[in-house]
Structure formats: C-alpha cells, structure tokens
Length: 143
Image (tube, rainbow, N blue to C red; front, side):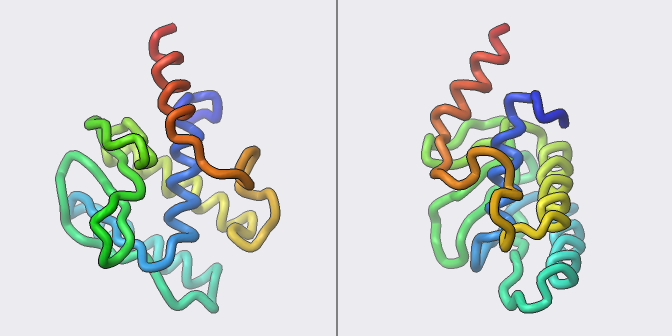
C-alpha cells in the first residue's frame, strides 16, 4: 500500500495499536493465528523485555478486530462493515489489510517503535482522529 492511499493513516494507527496495546486480543479468521504467532516471535526478538504479547481468538471470517483482554469494546477493525465511530476502521479485506498492518508494524519495530520519538510518522504524537480519517477516505473515493 502506498502512503498516498487514504487508508494509510488507519493502517499506521492499527499497527501502532498492535505494538503498544497491553493485553491485546486479535479476533479473526483461523489463518490469522499462525501469523499472530509469527508477529509475537518478532516482537520478542526486538523487545526482549516485553512480557505481554497479543493473543489470538478465532472470530469472524470477514474481519479482524482488536480488543483489550476482558473488555468488550472494540479498538480497531479491518473489514468492509463499518464499525462505530470510536473504532479505528480499515475498510479492507482481512488478508490484504493484515498484510499492510503487519508490514507497517515491522517497519515501526525496525525503527525502534514505541521507544523512539517521532518514528511512528507524522501526527503520531497527538490523539487519533477517526472521524477525519473516515472523511478523508470518503472524499478520496468520491474523486
């Protein structure tokens, strides 16, 4: 995915969420379990002091969702069906979406994220604006 794609900021935000969220549970299709395991091995290699790793739970075939362990609230979603506005949404098929998220997460890890200042990209120090992200995606698709 190119950084000019209007979905790019959502990919980057979801990748940062995967890397920094404690007690993260990733719900998704069965194929995702081995990929999450692979990502956890990478995380343990790059962040040897880390003790909490994302867990996988089988879920919907048509989406990938991020949750905190023990909480029902969704933090992020990769899938075609639009979630509530407080959820980071990446409107992509799960396989292509996860490939983009994993690629960006790997790049961020290589840059030293989350321990580096500014390596998460521009506008990463402030709060995420989901409404602006969705508006940008709609405007781009209408061109």
